[in-house]
Image (cartoon, rainbow, N blue to C red; front, side, top):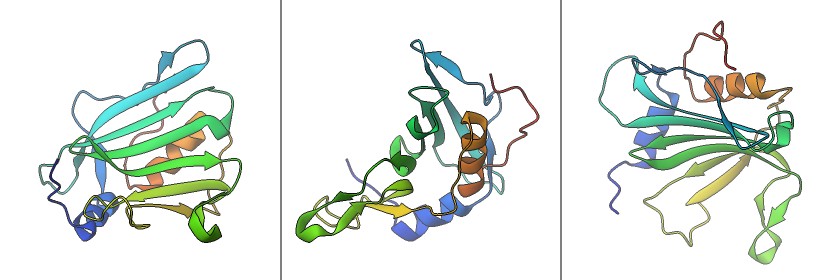
Length: 153
């Protein structure tokens, strides 16, 4: 599958102000007995037609370290937020996934063997108390402007 977005353009889109597309709602749906998930289409506030989606999920809604978020462009993940209980290393002992909350930064123009293809950057100030708080933090991180006054459950 070809990829026509430079890393600079993806970065620009991630930082650009976004909002929910018409008809979208930040309402989580149940996934199994304990999980929750939402998937919504986004629009750039200043215009521009891009296929952007935001996904947030919780394997166990009451357990913050099971929460994940992803930002998709043309149905391909370009950013992600997740938690790792342990530090994971690659060749030569280099840290690949830091312990704690981190952001995945994916660059499809780089080969999968390149460390920059899917970087995991530590988010030292990212703190999460519950699923709504996680959702707010992810939206702030990726400049998704939403009304958090609505009921998310």
